[in-house]
Image (cartoon, rainbow, N blue to C red; front, side, top):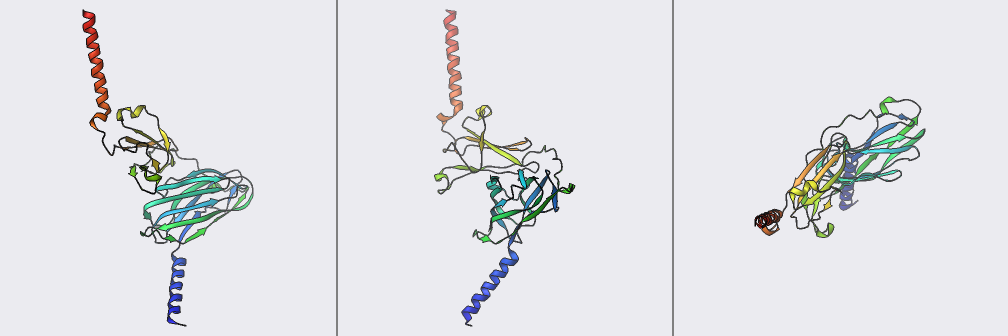
Length: 295
């Protein structure tokens, strides 16, 4: 065997060994072996980075719709800071998700999100993780090998109390403080300015975001909110507007973030100037009318 061939096989051996030892894991938290028909249980989708830092992950969850019904998706306390594709039901039995964590996440039992299911009938089944991909936070964006552990379950009449969801706690806390960022890239939204924002809620989870833009700050309280998702293309591409972003959790608690205009309007474009001018004009008209009636 030539030296070149030996070197090739040594490199291949260590590469395969490294993959098998250091591959990241994506798996479910399995608490029991069964549930009671027509009752609910929660499956947590978790990540073990095996010593690496992971800054992006995507995949989909497949479940048997004849055995289970998806009731709710929770992303509170997720290691994902910014969802590209927030976990959602795409088909009757498929959940898709995609997100990033700037700076990367390293650790065990990192919660990606949770899915709450309701058992529909007796029998056995499996909840699968498919097309799972993750990127290492090393500057190269290299894809890391993923080991997948699916969740097998059995639905029976046996009452396993530990597999049922407890009554939800009252969530009175606001979503966490966050700061939206204005960004622009030639290959994104045709080079238009857009807004990136994300926060977390430790209680019930974020339900939605809302946005409003205005050059007249004092009028902001009278303007309606528009539903929005990050990234969001700004309506005012001149960046002369105040931007308000409101995060609301599933219990109705809110957190407001505000951005000042990136560029100030010219003196003659300031709304206050027109208001003052209008007030002065009204004052002049009023004084003229008074003098006229006195005569």
